[in-house]
Image 1 (tube, rainbow, N blue to C red):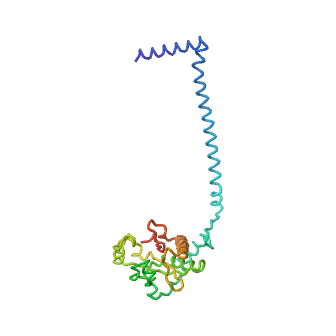
Image 2 (cartoon, rainbow, N blue to C red):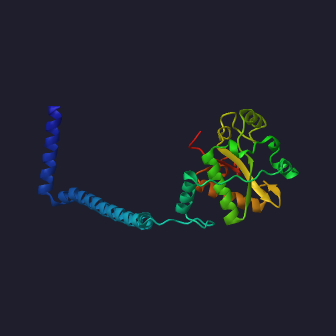
Image 3 (cartoon, rainbow, N blue to C red):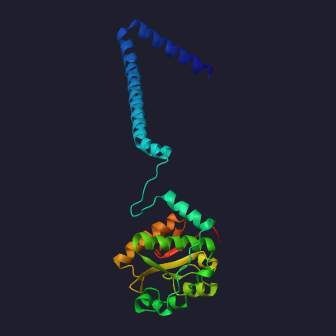
Length: 249
């Protein structure tokens, strides 16, 4: 190790003497070093310029949103006459005291037409008793019904609310195209879910091939989410008429 150190010192001494005595040697050694340092300096300047540009772009993108947030302004969704703050206030009023009454029951034959049977073949055994649903969920869903009627002209009807564990298992046994949830895996068993559709000309409309109905499902889904409900139209296996209240079970 000592011999290696002495040899290295001797080599460095020879190189230093060569650079001092011979200018050409000095230039040959220093020129690459100077060029390297210049490249490093230029790279740093380019990096600083890129950081500055990125900072400016970030400010341009975020300042408008920050301004809206700090000012307390609300963004209006198309198709709604009220902003979300007004919606929240209406829902709070419902839960504090104002009570919406469920609609009058429809004749059973309304739910057994050929169109309904084609779309929902096992609907004849469904329960549509609003009294079996959770009170808070009922008020939120009835607010959606009322808003759909008053603002968008859609009359809504509940196809199924509370579902017994036995019926849930029967539906699951019919295949995953009906439901993948078995008994007590669905919010229907807790009275916290309902399947809904539209009433047009005294007939229940469920078909997803009906443009009028699909526009209604879109509005219904937005309102359900505004009311704090989970909408089945966003699931992988879409269930456009389904809404549930998930924070209680």
